[in-house]
Length: 141
Image 1: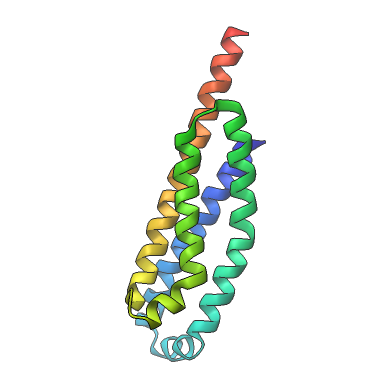
Image 2: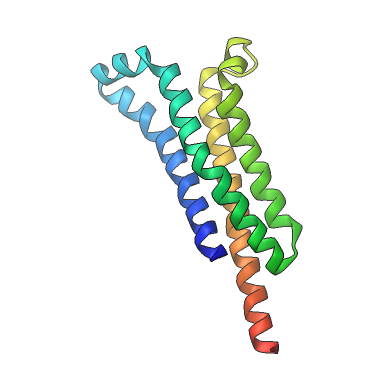
């Protein structure tokens, strides 16, 4: 069951990364789309990021708890939670950070992608550690 949650969390991180990459590409290729997106960019960012976090947070927490109970390794949990912290922080505070000129607008996308990659790597580590522990227990028992 934990493997499904890990895979789902990896998928959600991938969807987020694809969204962050494809939206600017589409905006650059289609001028009409760029005007439309620019007009509602802040609202779009808020709703999309809030919506995706509603799924990422509980799925990740469930996968990490189940995985940790199986393998008892902190590294996968710490890496995934660090990535999740980055994703959540940017989703909640990007507007403020940009308006205070702490990060540029393009920095939001870069930080989100980095956070998504770290988050996905944590879940991959969680999945591998769980598999290794499960195989080890099966062989011994």
